[in-house]
Image (cartoon, rainbow over all chains, first blue to last red; front, side, top):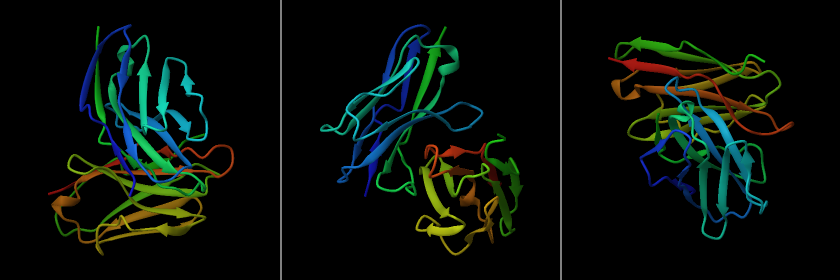
Length: 116
Length: 114
């Protein structure tokens, strides 16, 4: 079974600084996708970034980037120039590849606090 | 696009009552997912449909839970009878096989069973 582990229940960062959220996963598959979702207090789940396992290049979306280490099964999220609006719960998620029907497997989340 | 629509946003009911949660996926999406979020178990999949057909219902807790998708634009998740341990946030998400396959989530329904 696929498992996703987020070892940091809580993290905090000063506004304008950089923070990295950790995620590891366990799978025997070679084709899969990884995601980071953000859940603010409104509880809406918002996709932040995705990474295809077959791509060696790390995904980047504006201030958000990932460090994907396939051999180590590690998928960390870096938030640069942190803003107050980045405060939220962040979930790492895994989906098998080969089919678009796959379910998401979520980690337990990391609560990010941004200090002014 | 209106996004995934869920109703109601909040539901408070008494133990033993029937509860029906509703979801309208994004137009054109052909996969629909029901997730449940609790403090104890985190986010977990209950069931998902593709082209209105249930594909994987292994996450449905027990026979008290049932889900239907009578057409491409509507799905229900029903709990009968409800129990206090069913209290959670229930999310519906949809995705499309074309134009990207990310799952887009609705705002969730917060269910409280007293």
